[in-house]
Structures are given as C-alpha cells and as structure tokens.
Image (cartoon, rainbow, N blue to C red; front, side, top):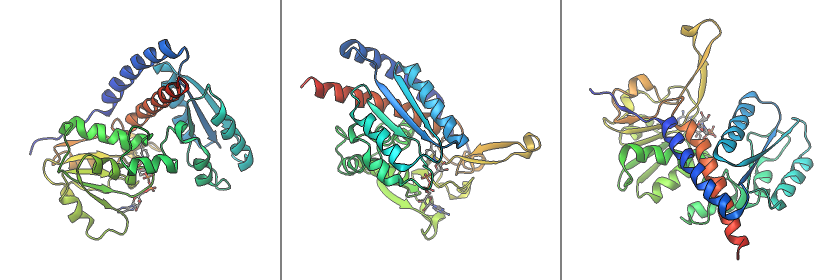
Amino acid sequence: MSEAKIIDGKAIASDLTDKLAERTKDFVAKSGAAPCLAVVLVGDDPASAVYVRNKGKTAEKVGFTSIQKTLPADTPEDELVSIIETLNTDPSVNGILVQLPLPGHIDEAKIIDLIAPEKDVDGFHPINVGRLGAGNFDRALIPCTPAGSIILAKSALGDNLSGQNAVIIGRSNIVGKPVAQLLLAENCTVTIAHSRTKDLEDVVRGADIVVAAVGRPEMVKGGWIKPGATIIDVGINRVDAPEKGEGKTKLVGDVDFSEASKIAGAITPVPGGVGPMTIALLMQNTLTAAERQWGQSQG
Ligand code: NAD
C-alpha cells in the first residue's frame, strides 16, 4: 500500500498570505488606507492568547493594521457590547473578531449577533450563516476553518469536487455545518455524522472525502478509511507525549494519522494542516470586507 500524499497546509497558507499581501498593496494604493482587523479577547485562556497573538502578527505581515483589545475575564457583558458597538461604527475598522469561547457569564450568541455582518470576519453572524446557506457567496463572509478545509481538499483532488461522497464528522456551527454547506455548493453528496450517528465506521467507509471535526484524539482509525480517500483533519487535541520526556505533550488530530496515511490518498497533518489555513482565511476575509466597504463608500 502506498503512503498518502501529505497535504502541506503550512505551505498552502503561506502562498495564500503572499497573494493577499500583493492584493493588499493594490487596495492601499487605491483606497489610501490599510485594512484594519480588530481582535477582542476576553479572559486569559492561554490557547486563546496564542491564537490572538498569531492573528495580529499575520495581519501585520500581510500589510494590515491590527487592533487588539484584551479585557479581563470578569468584564461585564454590557462593557463588551459597548466596545463592539464602537468598533461597528468606526469607519477605520474593517473586520471584527471576538475570540471564542467567551467566559460563561457572557451570552456568546448575543455578542455574535451584535457584530456588524459586513465586519464579521469569522462568518458566524446569522446573516452570514444565511448567505452561506443560500449560496450567496458574493455577499457572505465564510467561516475561516471550513473555507480553508475546502482549499486543502481541492489541493489534493483538483477544483472539481462534483459527485464526491463527503462525510463530515461533527455538526458544530463553526466547523461541521459550514463545511457541509461548502461541500454541497461544490456538488458533493454530503453526509453529516455526529455523536448520535449509528455505525459511524460504515458511514466513513463510504467517503471519498472525510472531514473530521470532533475534538477526540485519533478517533478515526485507518480501517475506517476507503482506500484513496482524501482526509481533512480539523481536530486539534493536546495529548501526553511521554516519548518526548516527562510531562511533555503534543498535538494530534481526530484521525489516527499513522494508520490513515497508509490507506488514504491524501491527508492533512496535525499540526501543519488546517490550522495555518484558518489564519490565512481570516486575512482573506478581512481584505474582502475592506474591499467591499470601500466599494460601497464610493457609491
Ligand atoms: P464541537 O465540540 O463544537 O463539536 C464537536 C462535534 O463532534 C459535535 O457536533 C458532536 O456531535 C461530534 N461528536 C462528538 N463525539 C462524537 C463521536 N464520538 N462520534 C461522532 N461525532 C462526535 O467542536 P468544534 O468546535 O467543531 O471543533 C472540533 C475540533 O476541531 C476540535 O478539536 C477543535 O479544536 C478543532 N478546531 C480546529 C480549528 C483549526 O483551525 N484547525 C478550528 C476550529 C476547531
């Protein structure tokens, strides 16, 4: 059995950010201002802090300005609401991202609803969810991880995914459901599997494309995979790694990479697969948002 092609998300993301940096130069030349991304972090979750820092760094690399608002974990909901309202109406801010999860006392859905849809670079606002569902891609902002997953699938299979059997494991609003919508728009035959799915292994065995977005380390075994299938592993799980030394940890996906890479046609690694794409697509959404806002201001 030949080894699967490893889909290099890091390289693909880096190519995309290079292209975005060029497009940003054109945008700055015509509009006179760099796109601006505002990232709001509430609390001191270390993983969230790393994500936010990386987002800010990449934004600056691409040629954007970035604003970071870091608020204490006990920030009252009202205060967060008023910060978002200010960012919504500030014409110099093109994209707003509120890092999730928010502390328990803040109503996440209420906060997402409040972000101006045209600045909602995460693509989580109900207006953007609706536009994605309706296939209105010219006006939607598409969630970053799902959009990145499709680019990776196409890097292995080519641009035409029509007729492929796609199985998505996981039905979250931020990954599973939007990935399903995107694959449907690509004319795939889409199955969404989840925690109540019967005979998950059998369902996965029928898939030409598997997108795993569960959050369970190495749950999908090699024996579940149809030979030659394309595997997009969205999961990021930190597990103990005693082989690296006492107390050490490592990141693994939702797919057992060592088994699946012997059977699949192509597979994304964790880390270095979907993760880097998420940030690149966030930059794409911010630039797209800035271009649309500038276009509208020109009448
Ligand atoms: P979530 O917890 O919101 O959803 C998990 C989904 O998995 C649920 O829909 C549930 O029905 C399903 N599920 C749970 N147990 C299952 C089982 N035994 N069999 C089948 N389905 C099962 O998670 P999420 O936010 O969608 O994230 C999923 C994973 O993707 C996590 O590991 C997360 O860290 C990762 N993630 C990665 C990126 C990235 O940039 N690469 C972005 C977002 C999320």
